[in-house]
Image (cartoon, rainbow, N blue to C red; front, side):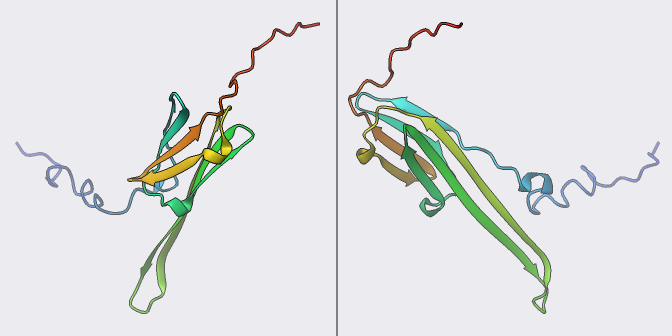
Length: 141
């Protein structure tokens, strides 16, 4: 016995129709914050952060008052035009993030950063001063 619904292919007509189109609209403005690892080595701290798709001109690394800041900004434009060069669709997007880490006891003048294959590495040499001050208990009145 045949079904009352006509056969429309293995997955239906709409499943693969837009498979190779642009990223779906719900994901266009999604920005993920890159993951970072901080390693305490003998003479330095090493921060490794995945930043795929960013160039070194789009990344900013700063260190101020014991805070390491990593940030990046990127703007993308996509245009589709007809034969007369009038806009049919024009999409712009902006992506950016900022991460901050408290890293004390660092020689500021010796900090180095490099970007290779989408991975940012920041080396923060230790200053030799005590990193953590001993804590003390504060009595509540």
